[in-house]
Length: 347
Image (cartoon, rainbow, N blue to C red; front, top):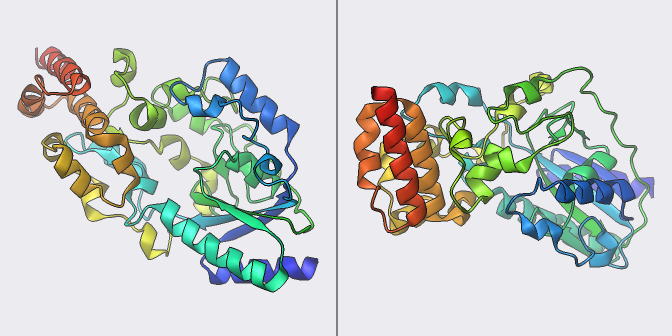
């Protein structure tokens, strides 16, 4: 069976995957207990899909009874520059590195997983399923068990070779393949990810409060955001990479060489004024093929208005004024808050 592992790793690298790990498909009681505690403590916010009581989340065999092995695949999407640098340009918005990519990583990774899966079935037989983020798979704990990395104090996966910048996908197969050893936790006494969080979303090591996380607030949260949180969101308009960027293990990471993950120029440091003018049609056109599209125009413009409010630039006040009577109550409410905040800073 170790020969199969070598074959799979070689084939995966030929498909463009940067890391491969193997682990049992049997559910981990510790992973499921961790999720239960996360939900019980109310840290999931609007993400009610995490609590769906169908018994499948964290249990691959509930989705595929014949499953024996999970093959975890990862692709490097490391940025060329420093994502924190964009935070200093207050008339611009900052978009999370993963969402700046020329193509949606879900599509890129899934196509390659399917090709690898077809090869595996044709060569070694067995049944299989492939997953990329959208299925009830607890990807980060699974990747840690497969030795791809470990979950840092911010709860994200960290790799000694690729730092914070890995996209994950899985092939779950009925083949029995020897598991890899989990990677050890190499965070040590470091608390950089906790210390930099603008909204204090990591109150304790390894404990994330999603309801305060900028990534959650700007992507998943559907309604108005509390003023104290908005005031600390800076110019983050889609996601946040602060805790990922400061991880010391990034010093070993190299920028991605995958063309699909290189940034679209219009998303590297977009002008807030231009983004505030997007109507629904313009939003859909700009973000076609991007994961940003799923947030919808109203939530995205809400985020842009928060960044305008935090810019301290009264020259952006007319952009907020124009949206104060927007057809979307969410946009209009945020615009009025932005005007009041700019007026306070101006006076």
